[in-house]
Every structure is written in C-alpha cells, then in structure tokens.
Length: 507
Image (cartoon, rainbow, N blue to C red):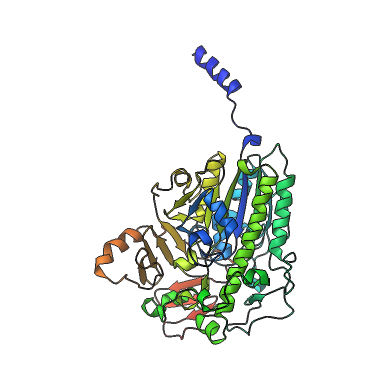
C-alpha cells in the first residue's frame, strides 16, 4: 500500500494535471440565418466563401448538420444551454430563458468555461438578445423583461453588431403581412465603405480581444455576425461577385407544396417574410438572392480577419475554432422565403471545428445537431463533464469522420412538430399526425413526399422512434412564432390567432 501511495505522489509531482493556462483557447463564431450556401457545402454553386472554406479544409466540416429549431431565440437557447426546445418550452422569440424559474441559474456553455478558468468575451448576436439578456421580438403585456443571471453570460461584452448603417428609406416595395422594416435588401451603402456595418465592427472588436488576450489564461471569445439576416444590405463590391441574371436563382419545383400536408403551412402561417409569389411579382427574387449571397461573402471576409488575428497573435495552433449558423433560410424553395420550416433548407447549417484535437481535411456525412456543440467543446478542452446535456459529443467524428453516430438530427418547431434527419432520409411529423418523407440521396431538393408509399412504412417507423419523448407546451410568456394545436377541435393557434382547416393560406 505504501508503495502505491509513493507512486501516486511521484506521479502528481512529475505529471501534474493540466492547469487553466495549458488549456486550448476557443473562438466561437455564429452566423445568423446562414444556410448551406457556403462554397465547400455546395448549397449554391456560385457561393464564394474562401475563408470559411479554408477553415473547413484544416478541420472537420459537417455536411449534414442541423439546428434544433429553425428560429433564432430557441435555436441559440438550445445550443447554449445544451437542452432541446421541447425540454425548455422556448419556441418563440420570447421569453428570455433567465425569466423562467427552472432555467434562471442554468450554467450556460460560456459560463461552464468561465467556471473552469477561462476568460470569456463576446460581441454581436450570440443569444437572440445579443450577448445575453432579453428574448426580444415581442411587445406589450407578453414582453419578457430582461432578468440577469446570478453570473453574467460573459465576463467582457461590447454592444456591437446588427445592421449598422441603413438607407433613409426601404430599397424594396412594401411587403405583404405588415411590411416589416426588416424586409429589405439591396446595395447599401453606396460608397463601398463597409466600416459602418455592424458585422465589420464585431470583427474589429473580436480581433482586438484576440490580440490583447492574457497569455497566462485561455480565452473563450464569441463573435456573432448578423448578416445575411434581413435586412441584408451589402456594398457593390460584394454584389459584383455574383451575376446580375437569373442564373443565380436557386432551383425550384413549381407548385412544390401540392404533396405537402396543409399543416406544413401552419408553422409559418403568417410571417413578415414574403412568399415566392410576391418576390416574383415584384421582380425581387434575383435581388434578394444576390443580396443574400453578397452578405454571405461579406461575412466570410470578416471571418478571414479573425483567422488572420489568430495567426498574428501567435495563438492559432492552440485555438479551437467552432463556426456555426443558427438555422437555415429559404430563398424561394417550397414557395417561401425565411426560416420556420422542417425541411433541409430551413434546418441545415454550416458547422465546422478546427484546431487542437480535430483531424484536418475531414468532411463528415453523419447527422449532427447544434445541441452537440456544448458537450463537444467540453471534450476538446478536457473540462469537467456534465450529465445534464441532451446533445452528443462529436469527438468521435472529429477523430474519424466515418464513425457512425448513435442517432439522427432532431429539429422541432413548437410542440408536436418534428423533423428527423438521418444520413439518407428526412421524416417530418406534424402535430395533427400528418407526415412527410424524403429520400435525400435521390431527391436532395425534397420535391417528392413519399410518406404514403407502403414500401416506406419501415423507414418511417425507424425514424418515428426518435420523436422527442419530452415535448412540453410553450413556456410562460411565449410570443412570436408560437403555434399550438388542439386535436379535439382540429384548430391551431398561430401567434394568438385561430387557424381553422378551411382558412385560406395567407400570401
């Protein structure tokens, strides 16, 4: 026994546990409304994102990664808390999760790193309310007031980001369903100067944090980019990367919704984002697509500035970079624009890990969820494990991209509506029991719903077993994009308005 004690003492002296200063840094990059129109992801053949592509090439990129709800607040809350929206009940743009007693003191991802010796800093859109606080999106009696956590979300923050400079009036015609001021896009500002844009300022502040970070403490620095979220303005030089003709438009199938259930409309029943019909009739389709691509390339350039800063600060080799988008975005596919869908265009996102512990040059086809980022970063940084996270660590895939994952990616949209994305199939189950099934190998555009084919019954059954076992109703003070459904009356309620089976679909 004494000899064992002596060996233990010798080991502790000569092989001490890693202290905080020996830990890898984390650069945490979020992009708002960014679908897979990224060069290396191939979502759009013309997309130009050389800096993101370079990052992907030196790390592992997930080609089948999906959000856990296709809306800002629930998606980001899920990622940062490590819990599904169906567990928290946060489905809308409100509430801010700290206003709910059961989540008020929940240790979020950056707090777990702070608690283990990291300096944490953030700017831009990380949570829906920026760097933390306030769900946003609702007004009046349902608006949730900001409730701070006992521990700040980040140690250092800067109130930067958002649109930045705006034109004196909208560049596009009045949009239907409220003519929301965010429903705008085009060339702005006219002088080709990007320095007034919120995302340029986010990058500048983040560069400064990287370069001035203490050398004896690891950092967790988060940069949240707003674009290509609407209003998506870009200067002319970014538009010039893309042709001003219809070759830039995405492929669509006319009348694509004829084989989708009526309930598929309920989850985006009435929104500020215009339908394909309106953008066609108002000659805005090409303008919107070019604006989105131009903004994507602009944000890519800002990410390039961050990568250069890591090199110049001499910390690139000891920094784990994780880049993610919070959900997808439609630009005419399925006859709509915007998010709020359970198809690939609404759920699929870029997800890249690079740095220590990550094998380079990998392209992983296994399904992944944004929920997986929390446990993955814990593993990569060798921090204390947590047993209350609902995601799966992606460390096996970061070591060998061919490693099979235990389960598919699961996306929800309010209670009862879920998309199950495996390697080869997408299954969708709506609250009224209606279904969709797509063969993602032979029908990657999801043009043909094959759920009704008898030969697919076993495939549906296999996917159906992954529907969330916990599926709670909306949390108190939920508002904006909230949908409920009463099977007894066959009536849905979208943002407080009753929707009946025979009501005309808003256009």
